[in-house]
Image (cartoon, rainbow over all chains, first blue to last red):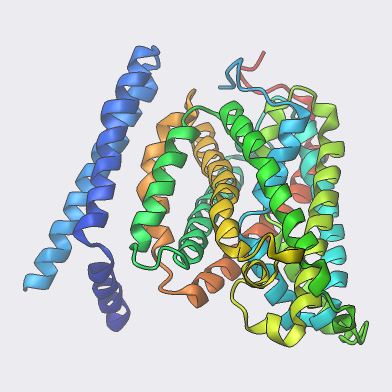
Length: 75
Length: 368
C-alpha cells in the first residue's frame, strides 16, 4: 500500500512539470476572466459565479500541486 | 439550453457521425484485423458494423423517446438521480478520455514528420484551436466538419485507387481460415472500435428533422463500412497479412509505397499525414463538445462554453499519460470497455426502464 502511494507521488512528481502546471493555471484564468465575464454580460449570473469558482479552483489546484511536488522533492 | 441557431441538418448529422467514427482508428485497424483473423478481417468488419447497427437502433430509439432532451437530461429522469448521474458521468468521462486518446494518437502520428517537435506542443496547438471552436456550439462544429469531410473522402478514394495496380488478391487466400472463436472475438473488438455513434444520444435534440435520425445513422454506418473495407482490402492486397501485422500505421505505409501510374503521384504519405490533421481535428472537436455539453447539462448550466476551458487541462494531461504507442493502445483498449457499456448496455436498459415507469410520457419538471 505504502509502496503504491509512494509510486503515485513519484509518478505525480515526474508528470507535473512547470509547463504543465502553467496549462492548468492559464485554463483557470481564461475560465475566470473570459467565461466568467461573458456569462455575466449575457445575464447568466449563476453560470458566471460557477465559472469564477471553477476557474479559481483550477488556479489554486495548479499552483498548489506544483508547490507540493516541489516540496516533496526538496525534503 | 439549446440556442435557436444550434440546429443541424440531416446532412450535417451524417457528416458529424462519419467524422466522429473515423478519427485515427482508420490508420490502425488493418493491423489489428490482420493480427486477429488475418485475411478474414473483412468478415470482422461486416460483423462489427452489423453489431454497431443493432446498438445504433437502441441509441436512436432512446433519443427519439425524449426528442427535446439530451442523454444528460433524460437519464436522471429515467434511472433516478443516483444511477442517472452515474451514467451521465460515465458518458462524460468517456468523451473526455476519447478526446485525450485521439489527441495522443494524433501526436504519435504527426511526430513521424515533425520528429523534433515535443508532443506537448503538437497536442496543445490542436487543443487550443479545438477549445475555441467548441465554445461556439454544434452548428459551427457541423459547418467545419462539412468543409473538412470532402478532404477525408477524397483521401481514402485516392489512396485506394492509386493502390489498385499494386494489389495482389491472392493475399486473401485461404478464405475463412480463422476459427469461430477468434472471428467472434475480432467482430466484438471491431464493434467496440466503432466509437462515434453514441453522439446521437446527445445530438438528436439539435436535429432539425429528427425523424431522419434512423436513416442518417444507418447511411453513415453503411458508408463507414464501405470506406473501411476499401482500406482493409487495399492494405492486405498490397502488403499481405504478415507485413501488415508489423506496421504501426498500415494505411500510412500504403501511402508511402503506392504511386500513380507514370509516377505522377508518389510518396502520398506526407500528404496523408498533412490531411489527416483535419480528420482527427473533426473528431476532437465533436468529442470535446460532447464532454462539455454533457457536464454543463448535468450541472444545469444554460451555456456549455463554461465547461470548455476547465476540461482543457484535464484532456491535455490525460493525453500525456501514455508513455508510448503501446500504452496508448492499452489506453484505447480500456476506453473501449466504457464505450461497450455506454452503447450496448445502458441504452436498452434505459428504454426498458422508461417503458416500465412510463417516463417518456411524462413531461420534465419545469418543461413547457
